[in-house]
Image (cartoon, rainbow, N blue to C red):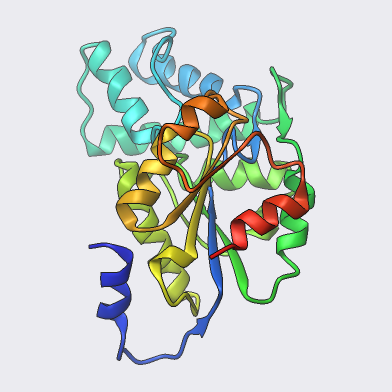
Length: 248
């Protein structure tokens, strides 16, 4: 069901919600920050610890993918099967490993250009609420954002442990926004901001707007081919970015 359908379905239910002009849903890795491959190191250590396979994620595509899909790809390549209990154990141990790895230096570790100023500016808009749509599992996502002092800017979200398929995440995030008494009038007032074609795709499937930013693995020219509503080289020009995010 698209966002308009979910909005209509929820009408008439008890409990008032506040109508906001925009819901802005940000991807994390490559869009807001880079963790210096902390996640990759934690995944690799956990995979070797639980399954005895070293370099289990080497060469596996991770950009735009959910953590669940990444794990499944590594298991399939290694010829391994994992039931729900084993995956849950992996999840717990991975989160423990990640909480250690996030403190170590790594390549390009830090915030993407303009992110801190942009989020601070958006937080002053009374009718805008920021959330997350990320393939990260929820716990590592929070650890990552708290490490960079960004968690405080986000009110709701959808994560890799909510759905394995990224296309399913935007409706989940919007539904959680409604539970947090936040809603918008139209599906197009939901904006997904990400750095991969898969971020654009999940917005399109949900009827949301998409803003692609070329701070991750994809260049501006490639992102323009996705049909994103807007493509930016980065988020450094706060005034311009705000205008793009809040335009109709």
